[in-house]
Image (cartoon, rainbow, N blue to C red; front, side):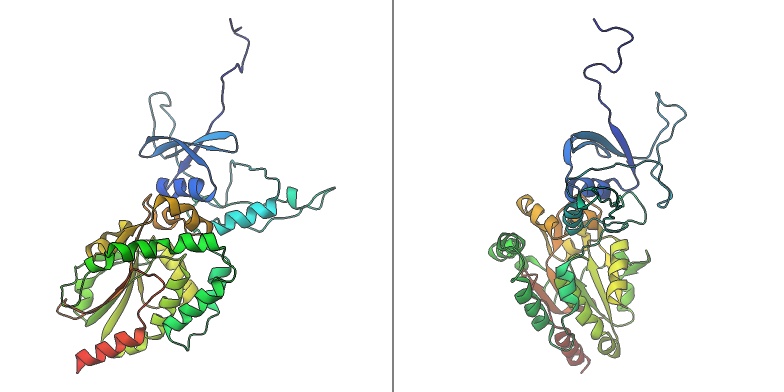
Length: 370
């Protein structure tokens, strides 16, 4: 029999409780970026996670409850103030930093060597900004993006992409490259592009938030002239970077033809804002949460679960960017919509490395103007 003075006793466990402002985004961070294991999904906004031999609960704010009648749970309100932290000890901090950064983690600083006796990479420290923080915006960094940004703009878009592919093939592990390209073959085999919106059909109307949270509707834009609607995968996609840069170069020619350009992705407005600032984009990036508009245009497909890890390895943990648990993406697509709402040019390709050159859009726009 256990004595009343014995505590803790066998079976007693300590669990942390983390309160998040965005449950789906935080779950994706701890599970897909940090590598925690989802032990049990208790409810839609409460789960038990395991990491490094410890368990913790992840949930959203709420309360009071019957057992805590005066207590309200709330996420941190000030990202600069820390009242508690989860401290992760690793054998090699520099190596862990590189791995987590490749998965999309954002750090306050690189690892710091404190210079004490015997201090080295194994005892360096770095602090990860949790995705619970309102200022946390996951960034996909690394060689893929750097390469994309150094490809010259004064060559055709597809040539830019082909140069990027050729350079990337020389350093990207073959098994990883194979997994990243596998959805292309699956889409081609299934004939997915045949179900997409076609030239001559009416473009479904939509209203979506831009990077600043302002509502943008297709029907309103069509009152001013034709609209070019292009769908892209997200901030993490280097092919999308190249395409959006090329489309930005064509904005003056599109405006001369009384056409407005908008780009749609499933990622959150915050990620669209960061991407627009990085690339210097002046046209609207719209957030299609849950791919509702892309679905109406017949573009949505799902990344197989077996391929999730490959995407995480290159910093493309989709739930982190899109704010949902889904691994859905739109196929690469661009449409020129006339003022009548009729599609006058439709480009849809299951191969995300193939993009429509903006010169084709400008030529078609000029042709329609007579």
